[in-house]
Image (cartoon, rainbow, N blue to C red; front, side):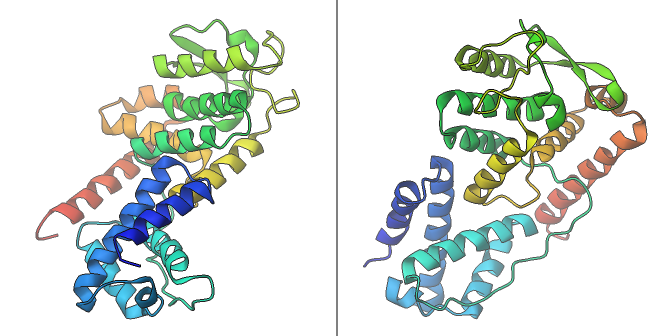
Length: 297
């Protein structure tokens, strides 16, 4: 089997047998192409399935070092390694003994926002993997509320039909029964309205807006479970949770000049100290950019 065929066959396997999203297929195929290109230069010979079955830990370590020179963060390098493992398992066969290599340690502590395109890809994948169209529309609307309006998962699933018809803002009840107004982007309004039109149980003022498959209130755990499944396919870290979308909402607004007090109101924080953590997140992001871009860093 020639090396150009391997990534393509791997992508077909992911789409057909694993039912991965188009975004995941593209990302994993790209990793496979990068790995083969590197190994061909590294080994000085053609890369075949048989040769991949004999790949060594030193080869993978060299590939990761090469990719880190491209500016990959620890989290991105860990995702790259995960994609490489999946490709090698496919190319070499289930019986092959693949080398063991620990991924880079991802520092924990501050909330870790995800990039805007990753947030959208996550919501798209969750919606695509839903078993019925109305459930996909429901999950899409819920996740857009988290990322597009900064809601907590409990706040989103706690909405009732009384929020309809939607306007430019929505009243949300948060912790300690505190209410706040959040602005609704046109895309978020459209997602909620599309779900309401498809929901087989209808929408009434006193009933939950978002319903479970059997018509009851939507449990937050169902959204968390769907996100866990989708993030695995996308190669996102375990810290990519529904709450991470709220973190991303806050971090991206702050990075674009949002006032800290206004952000506190949008998030429904009781004290400004809870909101100030996002200044540290934004500073950490700037430091990562500096370290990756500055020639003397």
